[in-house]
Length: 472
Image (cartoon, rainbow, N blue to C red; front, side, top):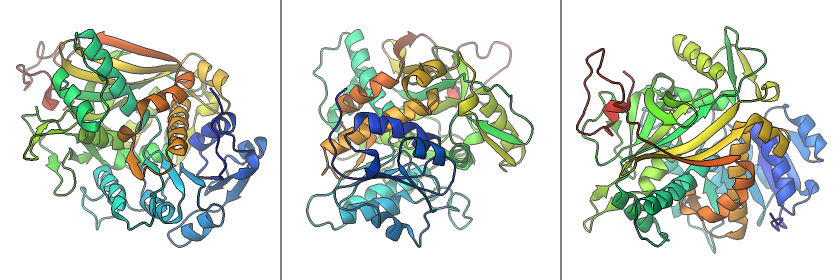
């Protein structure tokens, strides 16, 4: 892959496992020299990695009081802000970048610290749905001249998986004999999903990476950010809500503002599981951890009739089975009433050989039943491809690289979701770092093996109802 020319400076906010993993890719694939990259972070971890690559490292936590001064002291018009931090408001950073001609990309729409646990906010207000609506509302900012590009929520998921969905839709169309031209617009992609009969999309992931030292009591371990995973797990479980659904969950609630593409449950993601499927595991239980892509994909694939009424939308949500140590960590956190363990351990550097992260999208309800499309990347491949990465982290870094290159090539696109950018550009940049790309059909449904030993309230007429997926 040729180096992408970029003459501006780059400021990386946050430098945890994802920041450390993406830095070598930026230096490999952009023309930007190390002297023009600066890291501003709240955590001293990663200092040695910055020194290894000759990048300036500044330990200075961003706060609502200092973020403008700190950021503008390092970058200005025509430069790039890459936000891979936690507990720093994405909306405030996007606004600052829009007003100062700075390109922007983040991997998740984050609020300031305390937002997720603010008792003054309703569950609806502290959802990812609300965070996304607040970020997209910044499109209305009065800006003189072209609006600088800001790509929101683009790593692996959210991010890459939106492009996996498009690739999967094209694969299903081909394999079912639909003669179509590749869609060019949002409406055309939504109409294709409707035509194919896609009812449900899981972001179905299975992580089999394991550390040398197993998880201990009172310890939370993970292959990527502990803080990020914990905060997501404590948010209300969320999902894009499809037009085929007949049964709103008992704890399901609709939002009274915004695009209307999603619902939330009055329970946290760490307490919500569904039946799902991946090639490596076959049937599995996955956690419905809230993610931006659950809302953005459902919104993007919405078909409306002439009167503006929603005619079609798939149900979309995460179905995540993390590594075994993280599974035990989630269960222990739930047992403690949502209180984080006293010890946090990121296991990236101590993962033993052989494990993989299988990340893809499972499109269900069409003529061929279900298709899983995505990346199977092993820890061994990840370490050979790029330093300071494991399989999970490299999938995220690859998504960041692809979206960042698209933003540089399209610097005046304004604020955009992952679904709204060219999937070919992103996939071209990301593919060298995704291991094996798989497209595997399955005849599995959430009704498989159900009701044989114990009575269950199932909708046997439509296997793709959410009530058949959720683990009670």
